[in-house]
Image 1 (cartoon, one colour):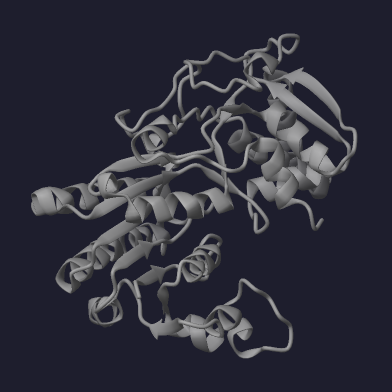
Image 2 (cartoon, rainbow, N blue to C red):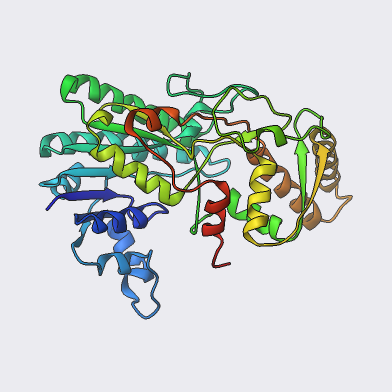
Length: 373
């Protein structure tokens, strides 16, 4: 019976991956930090069932919880002994404007931790390690550009920088292994699904209210981005609005399994996306369709919106406006900053080389993600 170790098993993708491995008759080990085991109420409280918490995962057949930390090579070495595959999801994730004190922590967890995983896996004779990176290593794209695996990296956040450095560690390790390279890197697109947090969770809440303002990046609100909405091929695209690259959580799991098992995947880097490029309007309409409700889309040039937000922030700092309304404006502005990033990333390589076919398009994906709301 094949076996796998999953780091970061209690995150957003980890529980789904664990259950997928079990469906394929794997024995699964979960590397979990001691503080997570001892301090997590979900691990000790079996009264309220949650299929994603640590307690529920640990109760599944063929699942073993191993206490350890990717920063601790000894515990990691013990955990990986005898397994066939390693899925390395554990990471210190992105936070907005992290304090300088977190920078070293990003390096320790995401870079040094990755090196420990690779080293322990090599000495344990692991067949394949799947390393989860992110498309944020590319940084903001230029309008009209489609980012490929060969595109230059330009990370702009401490999280993205640490992931780019971790990728260098992986590439160096594969180079040392030569023809026996066994690590596959997945640059995962923005993930949405039933367990969303962050910007897309906020976007869903706004769309549900029935009205949404879409800033037009280049001020051509009358053109919109509709010509790009249902484009199936990944041609080089030009849009009046910023574009995004997404993937449904279940397709992330399918891509990870393929990266682990396909013989051609060893030593390579793949963008993992739904194979399409979407603009903000595209995403908003898919969410509103999932709720089966009409939505009023108001397209306005971006510059005036940001001008108003800036004026209100200045007035608030001068004491001319109460804090709460301006805090809301600042909150909206920061959300729009993220959503309006231009991030068109191609997923053609993994489809061509490994035969990856996403199950969910934008409409079916959001319908599944929001079915219980």
